[in-house]
Image (cartoon, rainbow, N blue to C red; front, side):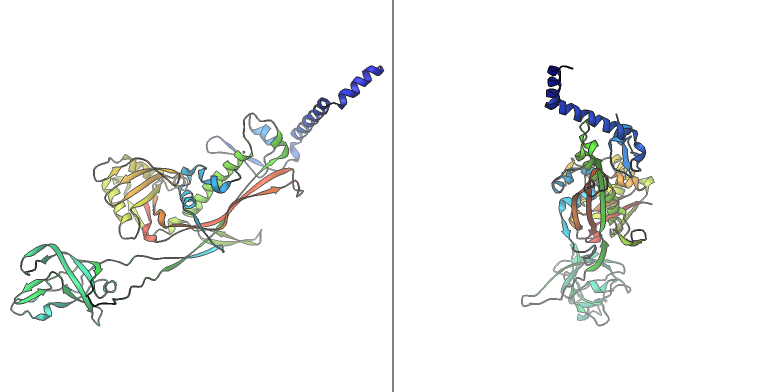
Length: 465
């Protein structure tokens, strides 16, 4: 080779094009080497998804796996996590949207307050008014025994259902039911009551008329005199309950070569993160609904593992239904039980399996029960069902189907759904290469949290008989 050709060759080798070509050749050699040496890769397996997808378990995502198996969350998780498929995880979604309380412990103690009962019945044979020839002033204030004397206090008023009251003359029956006034309590616990719109018997006015046994009594408001400063005390003793926070984790990895390799589609690490968070939220949804509150010892890790209790078991009411005769009357009875007898709101969420939602959807709407437009709340698109008792925001939850409860559902009052967080939802980056583990980059997603239901009677399980 002459001197002129040697100078041209040396000049080309020193140029940027030559350096780029050499680097490219070296990269292909490395890819070829790793492709052929699959025996030294970490033990991993491919699990088929529910809809034809593939999921890698037991190892990081590498170039070998991608070439063999197929022809990436978002750093600002707090702002964007609630946008990741919210319809699939309604309980987790609502709890995140509503905000969470921070707890300094994995064990959460909380208190719930029930409402004071308002209904009782007459017992002890009832009360029989005296004959007009034998009446005395004792007929004005009588002793009345009820099934729940303890719920009535002095100065309260009582509505006596089914017993008519009287007009001011004490002779003509009025359109309203009889109303009693609690003048005090007797030593034996029975009530000393007077009639507000009583009956004139003989010459004695405003007597208490006859009241049969088992008549329903409704506790109403208190009535004070002009000079009254005080009244009977009202105390409400909250009930203590407990739940455990569960540490939820998810880890994703990809090798350095996989990161820089050309791809047929734009599928990057952020997409991997989003898929991982969706899978993590689906698992959390099942724990938040049906988890068992326990702490067990892992002998391999030499540590206790804490599991959170699901809200399914915290709900204070239950509504069993007959699937063979699910009619509009069934739905009305369901709504009646969900909205009455508690201090809840008139808008509640009904989340259920496909069979239950299907039965509701098959019912014809009438003026008594009607289907409204779809309602978007907490980032979720609900169907609305209205009745005179209140409104249901209805949503299908495939979690119920997956857990073998397609005929069941739960009614949740969102105002009394409380999330406690010990470790907020966060992502930690781990440099496996710098730590000498393997040539990958990894993200670990973590949250330690639990859900609780305040006012248990504001929530209701729906079960097939």
